[in-house]
Amino acid sequence: EIVLTQSPGTLSLSPGERATLSCRASQSFSSIYLAWYQQKPGQAPRLLIYGASSRATGIPDRFSGSGSGTDFTLTISRLEPEDFAVYYCQQYGTSLPYTFGQGTKLEIK
Amino acid sequence: EMQLLESGGGLVQPGGSLRLSCAASGFTFSNYAMSWVRQAPGKGLEWVSTISGSAYSTYNADSVKGRFTISRDNSKNTLYLQVNSLRAEDTAVYYCAKHRMGGLHDAFDFWGQGTMVTVSS
Image 1 (cartoon, each protein chain N blue to C red):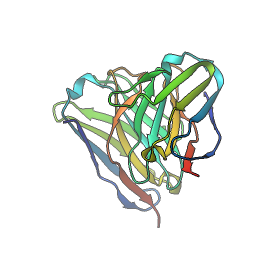
Image 2 (image 1 turned 90 degrees about the vertical axis):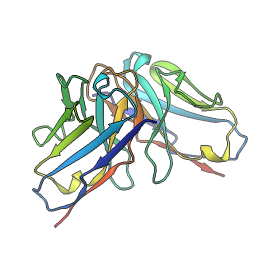
Image 3 (image 1 turned 135 degrees about the horizontal axis):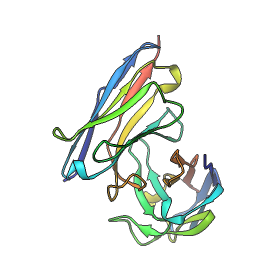
Image 4 (image 1 turned 135 degrees about the vertical axis):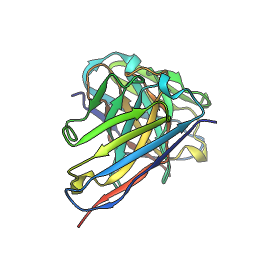
């Protein structure tokens, strides 16, 4: 099983600042199988990034993803008030089970 | 407009059963693999089960193998999760999710709002 570890657990920033979220895997896998999701309280998750770096439909370009192998990053270039939420990475590759990271909570400082 | 509407959750005693449903609309359901993902109260996301568009292939997390069964009826555009031998640790919101391009190994690009399952005596 590929274990995904996200850091930090909580990130406190102000609107307008840049956010950098990390997702580290216990073993290497193809970046085409890495996604990022955003979840707000009481809502279902929303796909932001797939294939490590491709933005999903309707996602603003302030969200970007990068990385390969075991290290992946989600960057939000300039935080908007609506970006404060919990973010999860996920691997959905051929090595089952699909797994999620434990989440990073992005909170307003 | 794409929609996924889950139903069938509720309060059930340990050892009990439920059948969760996910009614899909707004896309060609049979072309897409689908998954169930759950989230225990205050916790993160946990993948549960996946089924291919044709229903030929199914996968389950080890934590639910032998107890949960994923299925689909493409004539009714509906996904199911039969959950048996329920335990307290199965208490969670259960989401159905559509795979982005239809393949098994793909991101989940659309999610329902979830149905709550509570296992308690």
